[in-house]
Length: 286
Image 1 (cartoon, rainbow, N blue to C red):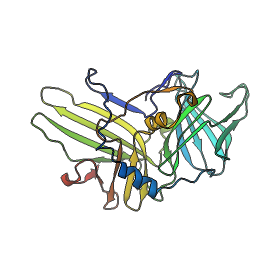
Image 2 (cartoon, rainbow, N blue to C red):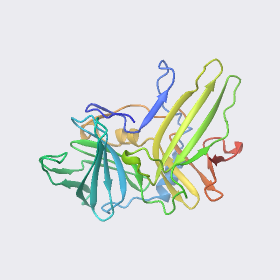
Image 3 (cartoon, one colour):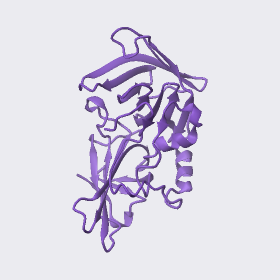
């Protein structure tokens, strides 16, 4: 997992192995289709000031840890983190979402990660995919890693799909994998509403492929799904710089598609991604 620092935060949870001389390029406009964004907005309207169930990965000022804030629909809040000594901690608190403001509260004490107590209110709330996709307080930035808004979840955790080889050229080809409901957060928790993509580009003459990976969230509408791997970058564009307590690393995880759609078929045995050459066939559950 990537570490968060007080000054730089890569909240899109990406990992990349490629030629460092080729920086992450912004996707071509034709690949990130505005009509797909419009379709998502239509399918998943956002209702503010409503309690919600979701988990966020957060970066806090002055901390090197990965913080996770878990919200439940009954107003409970859990703060989870793992120390550098690999010790896991969970602390209980509460939250409210009223008047377009999320307020986080937790008692203090010698054993609390917040000895003076926690009482922070949001300065930014970013709605995407019909939920609070990201928010910021004066002390931290939080990006959604999963949620409970999908009416149906895969019949198994870590549902991993192997996609057909695509973009076959004279000297290159591409292999993709998609995973639903991963376990990338502390304590091996299953995360509903989460999605992972790995893109391997094979180049003749190179021993290892160029690997790009990212985590995101997805929503379901019947058997059709929509997913975003660019929430951190959207937040950077959505909010004014002075509203964010830490900087967000520029760039996007994938050079082709960071907003995708598709269909889940055959009782979750197959998955088709509209942007990854669906004519080549569906991705198969492994």
